[in-house]
Length: 312
Image (cartoon, rainbow, N blue to C red; front, side, top):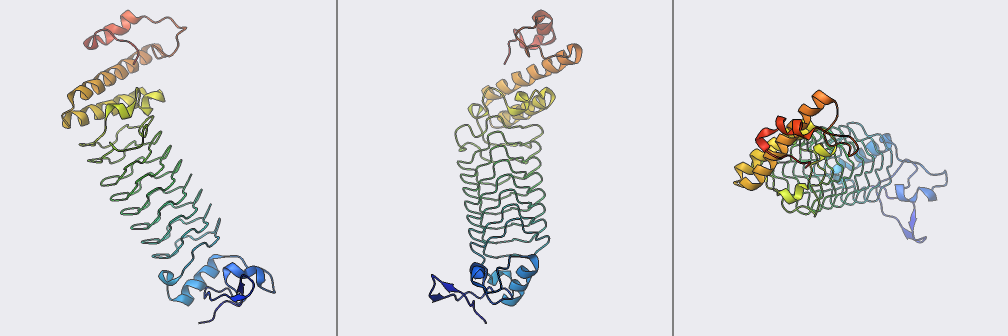
């Protein structure tokens, strides 16, 4: 097989076999007499075909920002430390690919198959990863802050030390994931499948301001301290959704035998119900403004099972 015509460090011949049509590899295009050639989908296809498949191509450190690779077959390819920022990778097959330390910020990874892929310490901020398959993927220390992972399969994925602040995980399946020391602060967990998931060893504050409405909880391990004074649904003023979330949390804590916390969730659920009633009649939350006079006597009457009610 032909090798690159370029030189490393000025004198050492390059032995790369990943060549463009001018006979130079992608690292030494600056040495080509006819000028540099850039990566294109067609050139990538030609390189893969010349090597007999993506699993035989080493694309470590390759620079592919913004490249459009719709429905490419890149299973088991090596893209360690590659630059794929803003790339369009929708419906690409990346099963068991090595994407460790890869830059994927802002990339479109919708409907991508990343099952079993190695994405150790990858940067994936603000990515679109909807309806994708990340089952059994290694995502330890990955930065997924602000990314959208709705309807994504994450069963069995390793998310140790993963940064998921502000990520959208609605409708995602997180069963059997390892979230040790991960950070989910401000994440959207609405409709997510969290059955039997252990959330006790997250980063400090790793569940603050998260949204829980309609999350599937069944013996999900977490504590009241992790949730803070208010869950994210309540913080956002979504009292109907907050009520449903507290009801699910109540049942989950009850199933775990933690009746004190279950009672706390029940009281929170009742108070959100009272807020819903009050707003439906008066159009304002009873403690939304300190300057507004509130008829607390009437408000307590509507919440009589709780006795004395104060903002919580």
